[in-house]
Structures are given as C-alpha cells and as structure tokens.
Image (tube, rainbow, N blue to C red; front, side, top):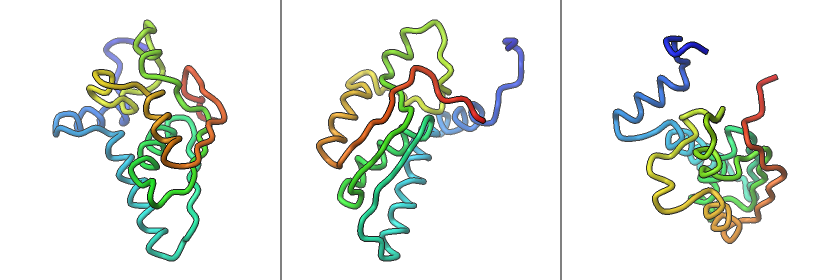
Length: 134
C-alpha cells in the first residue's frame, strides 16, 4: 500500500491505546479474562480455551493470568516469536498484536513455556504470518 494510505481501525485503536498508556492486546486480554470470569460465575467447572491466529496471543496471555480458572488451552496458527517478527523487513502481524517493551525481558517462547507449566497447553501450529481472513 501507499505510505499515505489511510490506516485501518486496528492500527488507529492501538495508537489510541498507546497514547493512553495501554495497548489493544492488553484490552483483548482483558476481554478474554472477563469472558472467563463470566462463564466461571455461571457454573462452568472445566474450561478449555481455543485461540487462533491473531487471537492466539490474547488467549495465551489470558490463560496464563487465569491459570487457576483455565484447565487447558489450544493454540492454532500462533506466532512463534516476536523476535522473528522484528528480524523481517516487514511483518503482516498487526501492531495491535505487539506488547510494548516485551522483548526487553522475554519473548513468546518464554511465555509459552510458562504457560505450559500453568495449564495443559497444545500448540497445533506456529505460523510466520497471520492466517488470512476467509
């Protein structure tokens, strides 16, 4: 696309969140955590999360934060690492999937390792780019 092309809503809302000191991925994690709280409050005893593509990261981080409520997680088409994204000339993973400052202390494999110790984790596939919409 052209440099002067209008950016999409995903980029816009992530930029707004960054200006307020947050990020879209943090908001998406919060959405998943609230859904977990809702279903647990309504009597669900065994909770298995499934997340795919751009939803894999919010699902993974939410499962880690709510590991006392989530039994297991299956990730489909998850990104392998943030480092692999920044080593490319360009990535198609949107900015809203990025956590500001994350690579200063860890990368996604570290998160997946911690997650696998907290819940039953099944990663079906790593992809270098997000799965295109159908």
